[in-house]
Image (cartoon, rainbow, N blue to C red; front, side, top):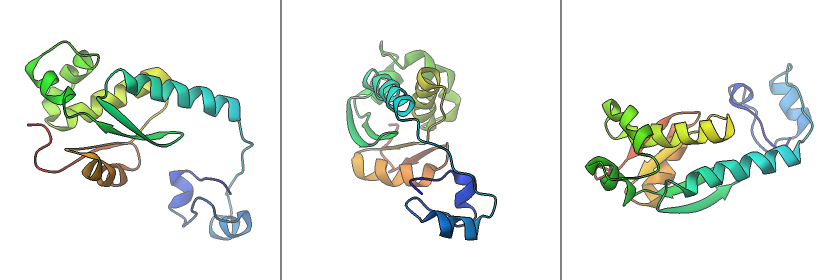
Length: 147
């Protein structure tokens, strides 16, 4: 089994697990054929959306990236012109999570997919926050994020 969703993970199914083991843990597991072209197109939309809002992107996988937003966040807080400004303003009531929600909105509008977002003052806390944010949430690590 190449990958699994979060419902299957609650039964103990993991990415890379054999189908036989996955069926033992989750008898109702279903397999789906690969749709490589659809994955490629959606992944392209995902990354193109991020390029417009992030200062730098570290590619992790077809659907995951770590974002350096260290210049974007101060600009958004000052009200400067930025591709995420409208989305950020719509979520300002969330405090530091507003940036993550703005990024999630951007991804959702570009791909019609949900995403988990982790934000940190650099890539290490962003990585940790991304792990904590699974599935489909926003988490912030590090006391310096957001001001």
